[in-house]
View (tube, one colour):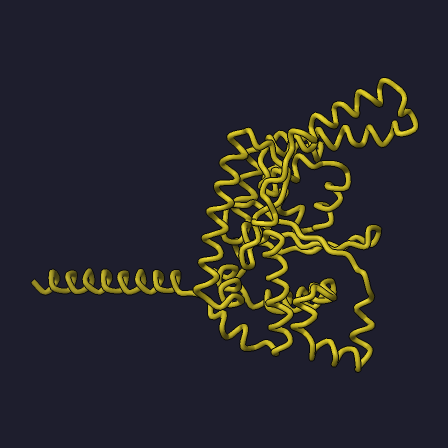
Length: 314
């Protein structure tokens, strides 16, 4: 009898402990990361820089990689000035910070704001458990260009694996989504270099522009490059044939959205060239319109910066 009672107590204690552990794990899993504390650790100026940084990324469609199904998004900016001038000139620095909102609204010093925003982001990134996303930056000295790439890891890997033959041809060897993700993470400049090398088809697929649309754009760019080579033969039949081919693609490919009407609040609709007659384009436009409304409605309910960091962390 005593043995039975002892066994019963042991089983009861085991079940109780397991239940407590399960619910503790569940609560931990569902609990959100304390983003308010992270934001509170920043100075007022750092918060302004970080908010502008993410606002700029959202205007360039990076929000769809964060909140939607877009595998990746890409933003590039040049250097029209030397940011060191502002940092080293006390008067200009004070004037800039005092008139931050004016500069922001007039789109002045955008490159400077992006540079400072990136610096602030790297400070914040160390405090976040970033598992589902990558935000990478590259710098091209040759082109005087910097770029930000936002990657949704799950969608990126899935997209590459589904279109494996294109990416394997691009790199000249079999490559998986995980391997390409690691490659971009190790050297984000590869992304920009592949664009410059006229690899628009694969880049378009990665940016969520659709397989058919990306292929058509690649064909058009191939012809454009051939045209550039034969400019000195304008009277030749070869040149005229290329012009006709280029015009054919130019007539097929149209802007994905009317940009004049696509800008709602902070989240622009993705801009790329499409064949408007295909089912692929119809589905893409429908999806992006739905995601745009979802993103805007979600951001309206919360503090912008808090929601972005919460999404990245959780």
